[in-house]
Amino acid sequence: MTTPRKCERIWVVEALRDGRVDGVERAKAARHLETCAECAREHAELERLACELRDATEHVDELHVRRMRPGVLHAAELARSAGGDARAPRARRTFWIAATAAALVLVVLGWRWRRVEVPVVATTSPPPSADAVVEAAQEGAVRWTRTTTSEAQQIILDDGTLRVRVRRPPGSKRVIVRVPDGELEDIGTVFFVTVVHGRTQRVGVDEGRVVVRLAGSSQFVLSAGESWERPEETASPASSVAHAPPVAAPSGIPRPVPTAVGRAPATSTSAAAGAGGASEEDEAYLRVIQLTRAGRRDEARAAALEYLRRFPDGFRREEVGRVAR
Amino acid sequence: MTRAALHVVPARPSEDAAALARVAAGDVGGLGEVYDRHAGALLRFARRAAGPADADDLLQSTFLRAARTAHTYDGSRAGTARPWLFGIAARLVQERRRSLARQARALIRVAAGALAASESPPSGPGSRMDVEAALATLPTDKRVVVVLAEIEGYSCAEIAEMLGIPIGTVWTRLHHARRALRACLGVTES
Image (tube, rainbow over all chains, first blue to last red; front, side, top):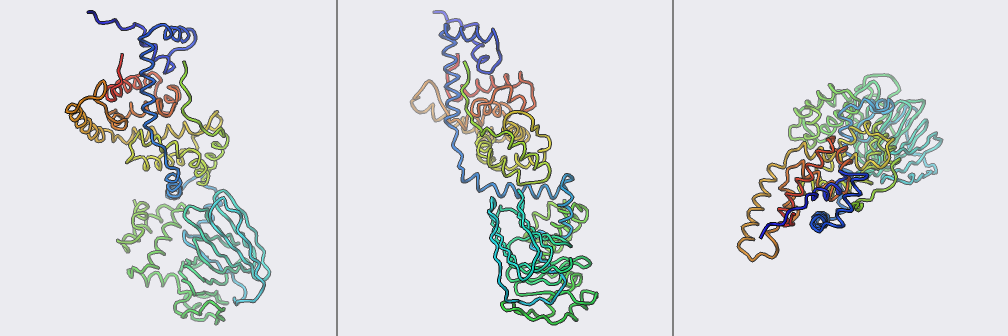
């Protein structure tokens, strides 16, 4: 019994399927399939193969996809920052000169802050296409506005005092408070900001922790319940702390121990060198992030190496290690 | 004879172009929009092309590269950004070159399965294996092409553009991939 000869045009089956023939040849090939049993069988087998492949494809869990989203966007943001994106708007670079990754609190010079019983105008957050909840309450006369971009919710404070409460779930939009002499980004803190004549005067923290960075001085950290006030004279940070006028502790905010208030940034940093405390570690990490986002790569790398030296087992060692490479 | 459309994408190409333009300008929020529209399909492809263990990582890498190369996306072309994203994912799969180790493991499973089949009454024309194992036996370049063509439903011309290879190469890889899969899955070949 002889073996049936294979159809000489068996190749048209795949050719038709893959778009290798067109025009007249395509029409001829299609007619051939209608008359040739072997080619028709080949076509059926290829279709069966395709069906098996498609049927075996599992449906994607949409919840799993959603859970991955914040991590993907965060990684993209870190990659963009670490890369010192040259295409970033100048405004973004200007912002990061004055801000850190953690919450910054700006208090602008002016009057001695005290808790004034004034009607609080609570403002609800803009409807978030993001998840961040931002509540801004003004005390007295305040000039401020609010905007929302695709990336961040922004509060623009021109003059006066605002009480800001931010709750930012992971993956939500950034919250940025823009002031005349800088900007700050919040990551979930309750704080007071006072701006007078374009200068920060006082910082008060109700909840969370704040890294304060002001022009002309290094940063320092305030924790919940602490406050700092700018002295009237222009003096060194250390002397300004010693001569800071007494601050009437507002209700609800216990007066901190003077040595813990507004400690000189340089000395606090140096004093904490090697101590490895959590606040110092956060401070060092925030320094790395700030320099990275400002595009100051060499300084960021140096700061990263310093972090790794001081905190070899630090919580952020992996992330900082990438900057240090 | 035409191949039925296997994938349906939201008909909002201008939104993808606008979102990627924002990403190129430094707005990561635009990436989130693109993610919401295409991550599910990409993850499905990643699981077939790279394997379940590597799929999540491939998905993230795809969007990271998309963010980094958003400025290269041609927003003037018709269609959504999905083919462009698939092209990134497909090239990442090939770059990773992990198929050798995975194929070795799959071949071991194939051998074990064939041995078991030979010891039990055959239920069909020949021994069979599951689709995932069969795909894993393919070299990366052929696996990517057959997944894009037969599961994701892209034309050979689209696949050639995604991968940056000649269409003739796509045809060849697809032909060899089908032959190998038919042998593994017991689909008879004329």
